[in-house]
Image (tube, rainbow, N blue to C red):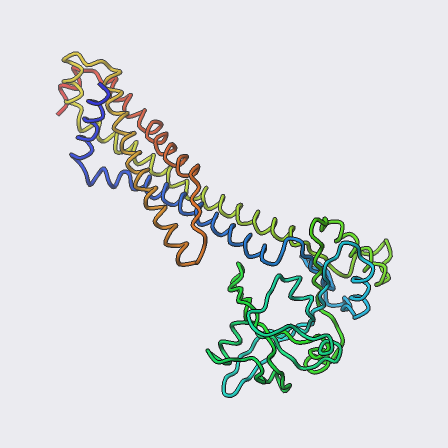
Length: 401
């Protein structure tokens, strides 16, 4: 009985194949969009998490000024060498403290040039950023103390200035300062924010301060906590120490900010999930539109097949059998749309993942839910036309032209 009902449903669908395809198009678009959006969103969230994890979840960023809506940052005084020494000497559970003075400069080698970011720092920068060298060496202590013009190049800068040639031991000009290339950073690629992490030049902090910037300000501090140490406690200790050093009374707000990488990771991941949910909800509206289309076309089908229904009822078919016939037809239409939509959504998500270099992370639960939802759409929106067909008066139906 069930097999015959399904067979009749397929025959009715194939009899008007173009109309049937246009009917399920809303379901196809809805299911495909939901799966594609959720899959791309999952890949984006995973990429953000992976990129931030490269920096280390035990990393804290310390900056002068407060950042956020309505918060002034221009009057906050920068950090000094004594602040760095205090953080290194007085904090418990700290693995490394890296001072950073950053500027933008044009670097030149022969006839090639590139405008890039120049960061004045020391070897602790490599530790806090989880960065290794693919070639060469880090700074010597004497170079850091004296502020010697020694450079460690990011992969992008090395490729732009030297191509495939060996850069170690060569001299480049950073603005008007001649600088010896002593090392090459291992490539990290683009961050989740679209910035090229390899487009950077590292120099000793004093060299950048004296010869490029012209002051002794430290614009940022990276603090790496020891393994197993709670970063929240380290953050509290940093805030307490800096408030004391900057003479901030209890009645005043901090004139600096400390950001925990775990907080940044949670914020970015949460934002990606919220956006994925919103996009999925918007795409889900297409399923509702597709359901309305199925109900509309099933009502048309009932009108076209009124005499057929009348004959079935006249020769002994029960109302429940007629109801089941049209209901199964609506469900089959929805399931066909759901299957096509799943394939379309996975295909689009795979193409987007390959294009945007995202992980292709399929959520089986979303696929199952989308498929079951498409079936539910067929039941809900197919029931009214099916009930309408089952309640037709056989005599009136046979008179229908």
